[in-house]
Length: 315
Image 1: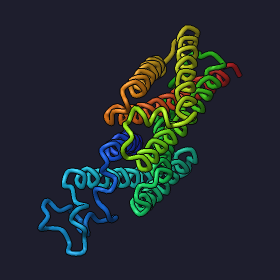
Image 2: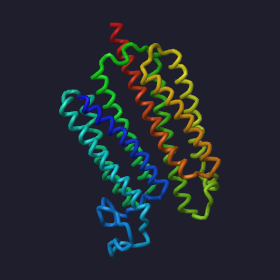
Image 3: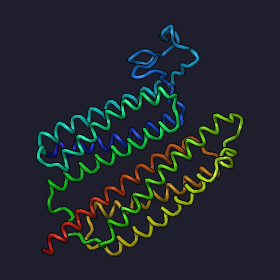
Image 4: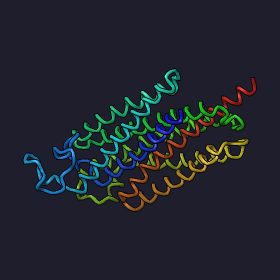
């Protein structure tokens, strides 16, 4: 049984690393580093020089650095896909009758297969912003599903987990609200980013700071919602920390991680706004949002388990 949980955890880590690498692809402009899919310049291993390009490929589209960044992204995607396949196989081996393990495992496998196909559509669309945003959101959903499967397996192996803990009854509601606000922020953020990309294509001579002033109200709504998310995170986190009794290490550390992540996210957002959207900060802004969402979901599941244990103990 531990084998399943280990592979599920590896798959989860792999997905969040892949989100980071995918963000690197986007901010570095490597999305079309390989203009075809699933091969790269009609080769399974990208070319290392102009002489290796197929005769029907435009040599002006070749950039060895961008090609290998995109190729590494694809290799990582295949690796994560194999990990999820192995996780699903192990789910059938150890938990074939446990629906809360089997169903998310199958769902993750189906979604990662779709994600691979959709990655090809992203390339075919020449990195249409809406397609790129959808690719990110699907990765976030896969990561959340794997978190659920991993945590449920842990609780099945450790039925006493969270039973000694007592959490405020509103804990799940607060975490649910934070997750919804975070998800809305992710959607708005991807739309803001897509809007900047469209503006950059329409007005190539426009400086990055000027893109912000031309971005419309969506950017300011995103900023205000981010500040609201920060206030809610600290309010909920401080209340839960004060009112919880014998919280597990996972919950205690998770609450601190959640608050640290939201501080980092707000700080990076302010610097992005003030300094003209530097690419490296865009990458970390995207990745931290996914880590925040994952942390909130882990805490939500832990509070759910703790409250279930409290109800069982009172019966």
